[in-house]
Structures are given as C-alpha cells and as structure tokens.
Amino acid sequence: MRSTMWLCVAVVAAGFMASASASASFCDTADDKVLCGQLVGSAGTWAKAMTNALNGVQKRAEGGKSVADVVAAKLPADVLPQTKDAIVSTCHWGYDNIMDNVKECIEFVKDDPTSALKSHLSAMSYSDCTDGLSEFNLSVPEATQFDDEMQKLSSALLAVAEKRP
Image 1 (cartoon, rainbow, N blue to C red):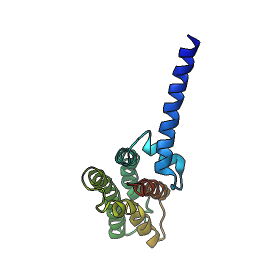
Image 2 (spheres, rainbow, N blue to C red; image 1 turned 180 degrees about the vertical axis):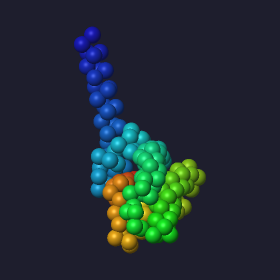
Image 3 (cartoon, rainbow, N blue to C red; image 1 turned 45 degrees about the vertical axis):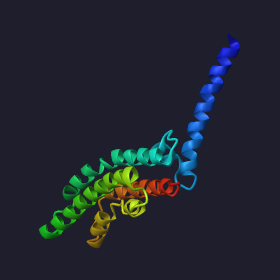
C-alpha cells in the first residue's frame, strides 16, 4: 500500500515537473517568466504554447474595451470636440487593432507560423492611444496601464514565438 502511494506521489510530481519545465522552455527568454508561464500553461508543443498564450492575451485584452470606452469621459471639459473625437477614435481603433492582431496570430499558428506572426505580435500595443493623449498633454491612467500591460503581454508572446521549431 505504501509503495503504491509513493508511486502515485512520484507520478504526480513528475507530471508537475514536466509541465513546469515545458512552460519554462518556452519562456526562458521572457522578461516576465511568471507571466509567460501563466499564459503558456502546461503546453508540450510550440503550437499549443503559442495558442495558449494568445488565448490568454485575448482574454486579458478584452478588458481594454472598457478602457477605450472610458477615455471620452476622462478627458477635460475644455478639450475641443474634434480633438476629443480624434483621441477617442484612436483609442477604439487601438483596442480593435489589438483584438484583430490576436485573432490573426491564432490563425497564423494554425495555418502558417512562418508568416507575419512576429510582426503582428510586435504591433500588439495601445501606444497609439497613449501617444495621442500625450500629444495634447493629456493622460488617462487606465489607458497607460492597459498599454503597459499590452507591452508586457506582447513581450511574453514574442518570447514564445522565438521558440518556434
């Protein structure tokens, strides 16, 4: 009975170590290895690791919709209407662009991983919105936080993309 129990413990531990080392191998060049490991999960192949990571980013990026929606309300009342419209439009476009890039990257992994995957991953940023705000000496903390998060996520995705066999 004891030997069976220890065998079960050893099998579970070996499985845990294998999944931890699998995500570690996809994330060993990531700036934020913990974040990368969370995105990759227990994937055993590059395609699965990349898909897991992209799906994780997509879920996190969905929160950017509320950021884009709140920008207009956060702008000072004295901002000219055309300026306000341009900034809000840019922020919505930035969010839509991130979501489109994630979806395209998922397709690249399935159909053609040697395509423009890295270019699309590099473009996953909300900086058009934050740059547009900065251009008018404006700041929306939620937009800045979302841009920072997207840069970290993009960096993690690029680390996994580099491991493509």
